[in-house]
Structure formats: C-alpha cells, structure tokens
Image 1 (cartoon, one colour):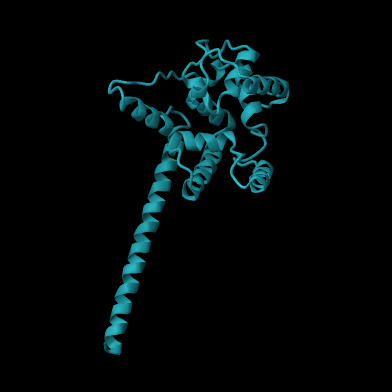
Image 2: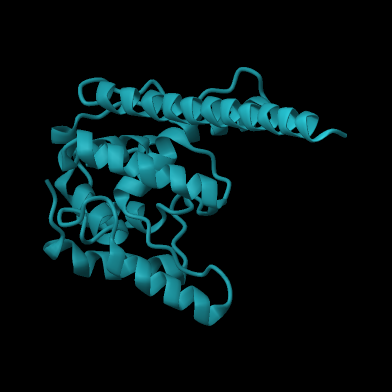
Length: 231
C-alpha cells in the first residue's frame, strides 16, 4: 500500500476514534446530568420508587404478575428519634461529620479485606447506601462503585443531612416495608435497634426471630444510640 494511502487510512481511523470518544463522553455526561436532575427534584418531592424497589418488584412479578410492594412515605418529623439514632449508630456513626465518605472506615475495611484475602468488611456510609438504593443495581463492579461515588457526591452537595436521612429511612427495605407493624413514630429503643440490626439483610430473619448474632448487634446498637448524632 502506498504511503499516501496509509496516511489517509490513519487519518480516517483517528477521526473515527475521536468521534466515538466524543459520543461516549457526551453520553456519560448526559447520564450524570440525568442523575443530578433527579437528586435536585428530590429536594422537595419523593421518588416514586427506588432502583432496589423496582428490582424487587420484578423478582416478585416473575412469580405473580400482580405483585406489588407496600410502601408508605413517612415525613422525617413523624419518624421515631429512636429509629433515627439506631440507624445512624448501626450504619454510619460519623454521618453528621463526613461529606459522604468515611475515609477512616474505608482504610480500615481495605486493611481488613487484604488480611483476609477477600471482601469481609465494607465501609459504606448512609449517603453511599442511599445512592445505591435509589439508582443502582446490586452488582459488584468498579464501574458501579465509581458511579455510586459520583451520586454520593451529588446527594451530599444538593441535599441536607436531614433530607438524606429522611430518604434513606423511607427506602430502606426493612423500614419501608413496615416490618414490625408499628407506627414509625412509636418505636421503642429496643424495636428500633432490632430494625437497625437486621437492616443489611432483613429477609433472612422471620418476624420475631432473634438469633444470637442479632441479639448481640441489638445490644451494641443500644449502647451506641445515646451518642448518635442526628439532624
């Protein structure tokens, strides 16, 4: 092939690469703007459903096409302060102090996981968990974690701590599902600690079932609740 022809092919290939890269960058920015627009909207309005809820409904409807999830929005001021303190004590003790990421907890989790040679500990804050629950799938990948970090920054930049906690409480599976059958504003410290203890995997525990592990978690959460700071 003549040298001129090689150069023409190279120029065409470079143009194709640049156009493709440009399209990908524009698409990525459009996705981020879509996320941020939703976050801004949720300053004043409630999400119709979270990504987690949508995935759960899809699972249920595979067996029953008419399946629905029970969900009732509870304003922040009507949620028991015991529940707020229990959740913060259990999930994110530094919630009021950080800007979305608990770097000390992340460092400790990385060190612990490296020692074990596998993932045995996480360090997700309430804001990170909310980002995942509202928008993302349950898959584990670096791309998803990166997107979670971006959305977490959006939440912390656009919303108050009070609003973040209000959204989290309303879309956490165990709480939104009315697990105890008790009004959200009438929970005792013990009931709130129980909900917070089973928060990571509520469907593993039948109503009223308290395993030794859960009992231990309840005692730990109850001990930490008085020091838990809430908005």
